[in-house]
Length: 524
Image (tube, rainbow, N blue to C red; front, top):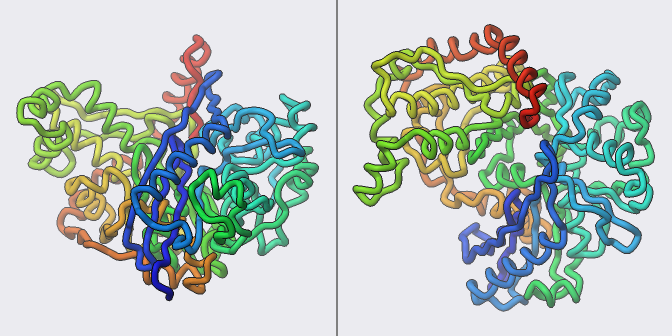
């Protein structure tokens, strides 16, 4: 490879854009980020302004280039990732007609139910179970039915990543990664499921959605001159087709072969794995054909609330830990980890159910909520904190049990995200599920994944697997403790048994609160 070659990754997350520059061996050179705003005009709605996306990208790109000191001519390629099911309606002049419907927007709940009621074979992608209102197809249906003028005037209806690729190159293309996992595209079955689109009355969406569906890492086009000037880059730089942010994160963790699983943590947990054969099962999303690696199948699962529960407890109830942290000049999580460290496995009989914002998988149930049971007067702040982390780990293990029931045995959890900084939490995940936890040198998984796609699109590496071999490096591995694993299984079983016992009571309470004018429940 030539001297002075660098890769630029663009990561469009929920709260902002992050630009990272790497060398071809995956060593980070510079990072810069810029935030944009999410607006919530009604309960359950979430919108963003594409003009703010672009101004934030200009700020982050110029900042990263300035920090790196690299000549724009040394950037060999550009790769992207973005939130998906973030739906944009564009007119014939490439202007958006309304704010984008963000992935977490659940206004299309009725449309999601109607998709499920079709019983179409394409619903194998959501395990033949409930359809999430987060997905792109129900959102497009909502636009057609509730804002017909917007829909009629839209020459293009696309995802955020498609919008970004078009803005950079002038080309209209869709990533198979996004088209499959959010719009039911299946290359094994010939592409988009026209029968499903016809059944729900939105077959004309196929005239508006980008029809050039490409694999991640495929060179789409070159950076346009006027855009290059805005971003501080060089016109003509190759731009590669992208992926969903979480999927790019999995690539950035080296999940490029069957059996490997990425656990991407933060406010929630997302699990993304690769399989050699398709797996379709209630409680899992996928398996998506060729979504990340041609010839492989991608499965997805997740927990809606994980790090957000820990933050909720720290901010609302951990008075002693916060006071002690201020006194000692350390972070409150350091104190909470100390308090929880010596609490015995099972937190002296305290079990936490992590459904604070519903259950994403394996139940896909938006009408359940979190709970704690087994409380006694002997339980302390440390007990509750440990029990919360244990409950999150039990939820992860419940998902892994579902995967194992489909002959998918994850060989390693490769982790990134804020919770990965907690040794207690990561050891607990390893022990509860009896799997090694691998931590990579670059924790910025999505932006590294985008840079890997850039390396493929620029021809530095022939495929994503080779890019991962050179650019992803494991820093250390946390091995499970077999004795701790055995001790945890009693509590995992109690966790699993709680849902069927409490489901109807939770449903009744959530519906009652909604009928009293409380905020609508979040979709799992």
